[in-house]
Length: 161
Image (cartoon, one colour):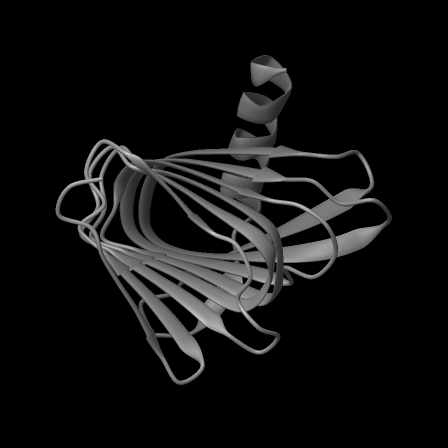
């Protein structure tokens, strides 16, 4: 795809400027992070496990990852789709994002935590064995339970199936 810039720096893959095209990271080595930024209508596939995934300032982008060992961060994005499978993915931190669909595929029971700040139009699709807890940033700057968001997201998830 035109304009895409990919760099492997130490333990991090940087993918910048993926525009209306597809790109695949075939084999990040264990312990590597993937950082995706400033992408528009691109599709990124990560074919193996990575330690962490960060998506920043991207619009209309789709990311599919076999497995993220620890966390997924989504910041300043719009109309994003993120799918994580396999084992791992303990938490999602989503900040200042509008229109985000998260798909969690997991072969067995697991708990996933979603930390949300400034998020609108969130949809979560998950396997029945996955428990999701929602947290939001309080006025005091602390993470607190967000039961209301959890219920709204759950309703959207059931309707989407």
